[in-house]
View (cartoon, rainbow, N blue to C red):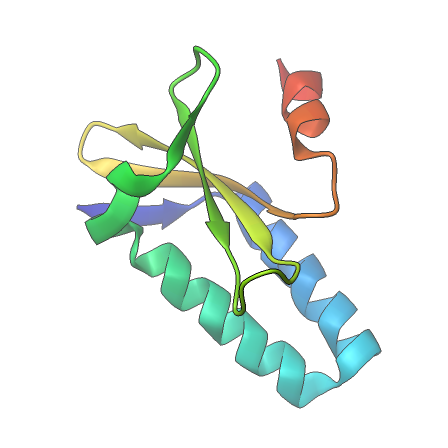
Amino acid sequence: MRVVVSPQARADLDDIWRWNAKDKGVDHADSYLAYLSEQISSLDKKHASGKKIDSRNLRYLLVQRRAGGHGHIVIYSLISNEIIVFHVFHTAQNWQMELSDED
């Protein structure tokens, strides 16, 4: 199965990198973005482990480097034989509201 990262999700990842680079340095930002990208790529094998979001055909997966810390929420859907990643939200964001605003 192929994982496709939408333009919006790519923009989200760019924002995550910029925030981390400013707050924790470029090396940390590079490392964290590589980690997130690896987790997103692995959706081809673990897409079913994501939790369903309401009645929509969307799922989310919590990605954390360490338990109990902040992380990111990856929003995706299985469409045909592709996993489309629509957004990557920080766990502190009100991602449910952001998604409802898109309806």
